[in-house]
Length: 220
Image (cartoon, rainbow, N blue to C red; front, side):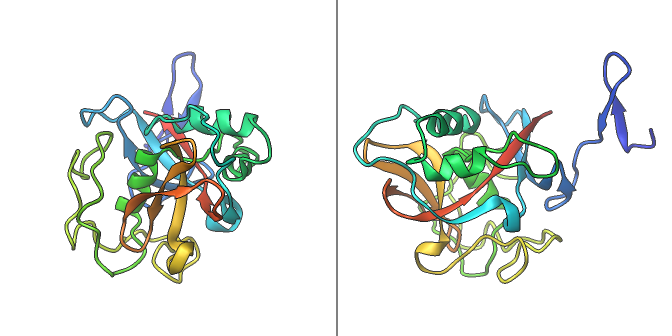
């Protein structure tokens, strides 16, 4: 099919795999690969939602002091579905789980290591990275596995669909706005977040309002 589609067993077709970071694909934009089992062996493409329809600028994570068991750093679909099932107090996950974008309904709040991949490949600015953050056992080349950032790597994204600061799909930076929720719980009161100005990976109290950006994954 001229590289546009691939034939599956049974004679059906699926789109050819994405090749370029920022490429429009699967209702959003291609944002890198993840290795669910670790070891750098890619298992899924990670697709980030458009900012205009797939980002919440003010969502709490959930109920402070209530443990949910959503502690996986890579299984965002399970974490997110579990949280949304707990009700509207879990605003970030509920927002992501309720989306229909591009005809797709399997959007979710990314787990910690999925969120890190978004930063690595879609760094919006030029401020330099937090060198104590970035280690990701589920990374896939060209991102190094289980390795912290350097000041200059990753560099500002070259993704061509508006992911640099001030552009249409860029992650927000500046104050608390640069902090995005993951679906990964760290304690009864806190969950993992990522700062999209410097890449700092830390935690925030669940009752705080932070950004949330939906993703979906496609098996390779």
